[in-house]
Image (cartoon, chains in turn red, yellow):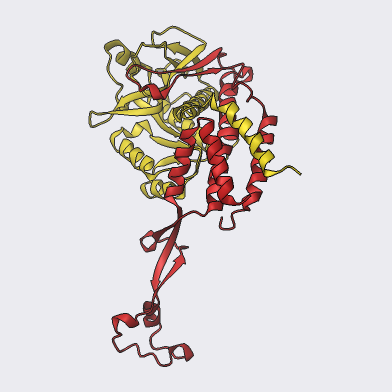
Length: 191
Length: 229
């Protein structure tokens, strides 16, 4: 299965599961593209800095003469490694199909693994006798007056954190599936 | 050997299972705010604070009800709950809320995901139905849970606006489950408080708890310097 088809299948699954908000965040990340901090150097400036030196690379090039606009050397773009941010510039490039699949898999992992872990940790902190905190019977989120209906009502039960989603074993199963799907597009070499 | 189609089918089952729990982007944020609230409460206990929970009407409860979106501290539509923290006998108690509006120095209202404020101020606000003033807050935390690691810079700019209008003792802090280099650069340049990758077991959690402790320490230094946490 090529990355384009895998991306399409993952998108369809999220849409069919009514998780459009995840797709929205994925699309925002994709439209932002890959950002890289670079520094732009003019080759001509570098030669000027070395004016007065001799060597084969300077042969046939007279720094004292003004150069025609068309003859100027192209700019050099390098990865920014310094600390002076005034010399840094931002470059963006579109994500490849493989990159887009990675963004989708990352989003699904945060949804299926990270979020339930946050959920469990919340309940554990508030419901743990060893914390010597008052025990909590129930945690609910309710829409306030004037709040938009899209904000929804969420009920969190202490004893049934998420139906069918309460175990770390399940986390491992999800991570295994996501890891195998990630192998289809390979590891991100640029990170 | 499991085929890609088999893997996708298995993944589809997991997604269908969780969709009923998190059908909108606000619900993961609610859970995340609840997690950060629980960290504040746990750290308070860790700092020798005594904790109990009260409803908006001042009734002790073990049923916690929070807002899905920021509202007014005096709203009685539901029995919204907050934690009350007492450090010794001298310092006035603090309250911890999720999703309430607070008045900035400019006189406009801002939304605070997790807010720690003086109980006296909270009682006054509930009594006369006004928003709390940031000068009487001890900690304001902005919480962001995203599924992708590219947070929009607009979130950081919004937080910057919040910081500029809240009193400094509110110690505005930005907390997110993901890290974004541009946001780190932005906050670093402006010397803001932030913790990213703040998820259970993550390296940021001890740092965040330390920031929460610092807020308690700073508050107690004003009212009861003899109370050691």
